Amino acid sequence: MTPIAKLISTLSILLGTTMTITSSHWAVAWAGLEINTLSIIPMISKSHHPRAVEAATKYFLVQAAASTLVLFSSMINAWHTGQWDITLLTHPPACLLLTAAIAIKLGLAPFHFWFPEVLQGSSLPTALLLSTVMKLPPTTLLLITSHSLSPTLLTTMSIMSIALGGWMGLNQTQTRKIMAFSSISHLGWMTSIITYNPKLTLLTFYIYALMTTSIFLTMNTANTLKLSTLMTAWTKTPMLNTTLMLTLLSLAGLPPLTGFLPKWLIIQELIKQEMTTTTTIISMMSLLGLFFYLRLAYCSTITLPPNPASKMKQWSTKNPTNTLISTLTSLSISLLPLSPMILTTT
Image (cartoon, rainbow, N blue to C red; front, side, top):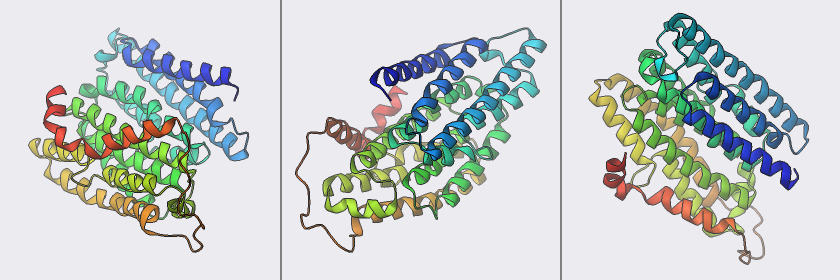
């Protein structure tokens, strides 16, 4: 992509995201979602590889179907209530349609099939955008309308997403697909609590985005697309791989790292709501995810390649993203002691 095309796409993504998260009218929110979809497609297909073109086509078709459902849901609600305000979604069929539409846009189970394939066909920076920035507008719509949606349906979808994200990630060897199933699993955690504590969902999303950004930038710097290349990256950038291991363990939710905070708070809130069975199920299902995070951590630091390089590490290069990666990694592994302050701000 030329710098001008990249700038236009980036500004359009910012515009679409801002429109959706600040709007109170369904038409403006829908327009923001459409701008986002059309802006990211050139970034997905920029390599002109058949897999990238296939990923862009799949993404366009799925997002177009989801946007149609959003518009259809808002029209049905307006037809019955006379209101186009997002917060006044009260008609039950409209609520059901909107839940399905947002689940498709986010990649929640059972509408998750497109997400791993699209991420696999994209470059690492584009996969980062798809996993974080592009999730924000649909998550915002889900937050605003959470009081109108069915808690039972959302809980069922969250349990399915956590189970499927952990189960399907077990036998993957491509890092982007592993991160896709990790995203599905984390979205399940967010959805499980959204009806009871929307602020906690937002906090979970922020922490997830922070850790995922750190991991994707590290993988992009080391150029690791498969587990086999992750194994050989240790001889080139040992310090980067060590911090990658800690960030992956944080994403798995192990104490005393940052990723433990949202899971701890979600479990606490679900127990307060007397949802002990749901809490037990999602806690057990998260152990599946822990296994493939440990597998990634093992490959990144403990496994050495069969033929190590003659030089144990390369000379440091002046990479402008190094400072950003170190800052994000530090936040990804050390925010747990600041949890009282974080809780007071939320």
